[in-house]
Image 1 (cartoon, rainbow, N blue to C red):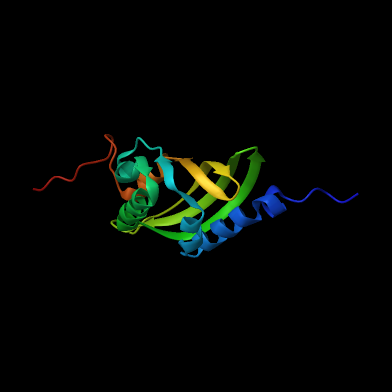
Image 2: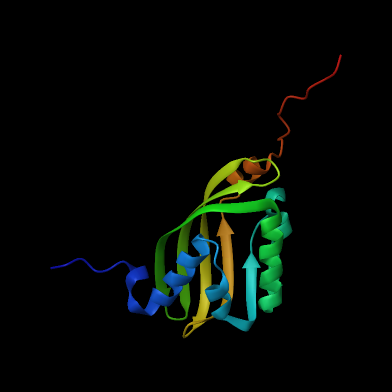
Length: 152
């Protein structure tokens, strides 16, 4: 008996797997082609390093604004989908991301979790969450215990 295929290789998710593959190499055209005109895009973060992209973005224009803001501080180095599961109109995606903060030059590896509401091959809602501790360090924020340099 052969093992079941990975969820991302299932025909019903092949379109989404291709979108993530394209995104991992910097191509977003296919992604926008699958967004509903009134898509709701939610990025959850409470950390200062990601505060500029935290919140809700509406429609294609809002999602483009999200990516423009993100691109001012962060550059993607590697994006890997670790798993994809489908529950009716909900799709859950786990990712491993390697990025660099453009202000500090520091690299960070973290995991993101995406929850998409889809109808057919159209994304109606996208919500992401991620490990906030690593992006804080990558952004170079000092914690309250960091030594302070004093001049003589």
